[in-house]
Image (cartoon, rainbow, N blue to C red; front, side):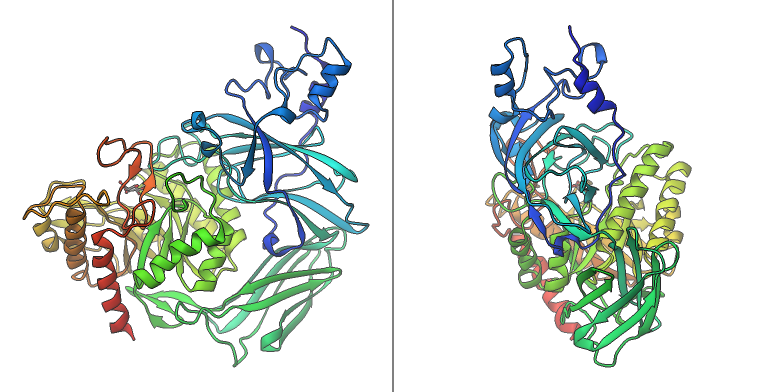
Length: 610
Ligand code: GCB
């Protein structure tokens, strides 16, 4: 087999600067690259490694900047065992599980390619190629050259491609590999569909050469509005910089330090209306320096813990929530969570359930979704997929988790809606795990002093006594427990209200999950309804809520889950058919009986709080 030299050079060229988040880039001017893309499956990964593990050859490297058919026409000996320009077309964003029926359970490498026209942004500008996310690892090539890689499915990444773009037609190729190993985050076994591919928007984002790369504006517990910003570019050091909140008439001026950083604060103006679920007031905020204007819409509120209470703007609050995966309504979701798709689900929470809180499980959701929570007035629990069994002793795994949490927090820390950062879900206690999670907790506190830290933990049980023995509770602001008595145990539902909860510390508790499967439309009206019936689920909710009402330090609920969601591990042929059926609504949005049970409980709590 011949190896052709050109591919070697392309592959061995160092990848350009590491990926950046580009905070609030969704509000910056740019060019959408969503829409029609060619795609081609590469199960043996020939596009990244050639014969006997050598570099890919001309016949296999998918990212070449040439038209394969034209080249073959010109050169009779040219061999291409792919042809990106004549491969099938799909619409991005959206997971490949929707591209073709045979892709339904595919895990591995898929190549995407499209061309686009580019008109040079002009001198003094930089152009970034930004992906909302790609699941799980992405290698990006522009005009045949590598521009960067990103690992981890749920956070944005951007590469400076200013010097790689050419006027007129450009070609972009992305290899996305969804296969994960035990050292990845999350590891391969979860309880949800992976949705490999490019599931969020792709854009070219234009910024001035020196620009606000990161900014964090928040209301501190001291009643002051604090700002921290980071400039990037040749004029970043010692540059004049200015914060303005025009409708409040508030401005603050200063200068960045030698590293382009600026931190300052001002007293909150009297006219400031605090953000809350009842009054989700957002302000246009602008940070200007040199030629750049960083714009965002920001709400101002405080969230803190006092003893076992959670205080929003100084007032005790009960979190009337529900959990949610990132999966749109419909029979064949592809994890394309448009703002309209998110609005449909959030409306069920706000108006349907009388909720004020959503747990965005089990990973960072689209940035449009957290923006919508800001607008609609839904408090948010945001988490990273440190889920079940993680390689606690592996330094690379820890590095991946730390990067994910940092990318998530930097992306979203201007969202007033987010009140809780969660570092893990149902992780088995061990010294290595405790050390791993304590590192993450430390990172969260260093990145954000204006929110609470939690983790979804498991409890121990002695008879009907539920005990919270996880050594991590001491490190968290809010304890959270997933509890499934009556579903994963065969306790009779009538016994659930007599379960008691003891806490080792004086802190608030959230039941971050409880739930039971029910197939929409399966009714069992007998005195002892069977599991999977709507009646069983409804009774399970009644009894669990009765138990919850007796826990004095309980400050919130996010039952599992709003909508039935795809999970390859759920294969009961009659009731599940590949779906986890713990939704209060079916995959197409039909409300089950338990929906009404929770709505009634939340409506009563809402009324009592008024
Ligand atoms: C859990 C997990 C969640 C599962 C759920 C279930 O505790 O955190 O990811 O989907 O239970 O349905 O078993």
